[in-house]
Length: 287
Image 1: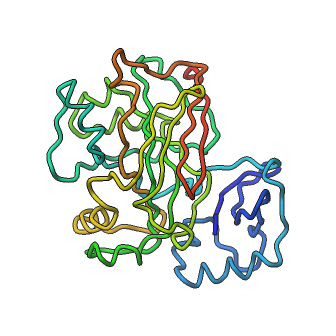
Image 2: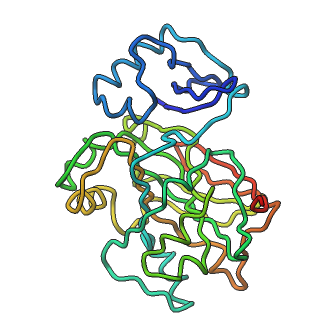
């Protein structure tokens, strides 16, 4: 299934996308508050939505505004330096990563929808994009072995891990430069795990104003998703709706020669095979 959160006639709802329509299950008996709450119900929640789809109204996608599938996750975490190609380009400017997993927080207040505008910050001209596969956790879990990780994954989303490079480098945590408001677009929907044959074999691409900037495959990730879930769940509990952004390949604007940072008026499109695409217009940060 493709599970979506959307706004229609001023109300935020959720449902399933089928073809060019979204099935609005929001008003059905027993409906949870949103997709995060649906995931928390586990298999019962998925059975409920499958049943609810049959008797729910359908709305053309063009008549709704798609939101981030999980508008308010408990955690939004990013993995740095997870593609060898990105490490090679970073090394040219003196950035060297350790061999382990390097995670950072993106504050959840940075989240916007898959087609929402994103703000070019007033305080920096080093605004950049990063195409990433997002993993959405489907079950509360701790101490998950990598070979068992599939059982706790609800599905996948497209993420643009937007970054303000000079602020990112202020501290090793990267949190400030990764968390500016609007710098966490993802979606366009959550594709459930059963509909993605192999998350480690997906073409991932980024265009800026129609110019192809990133073109890679998730098979090139250094750390695989099972290892990520094992690493994180060893330290803390993962919860339904948590979003893990799995790293970006080569081609980011800040590491081009000369750098090609985003400006107001630019349009950034990130597409991942089997999942879909998100597209965001860059506008000046409002007063």
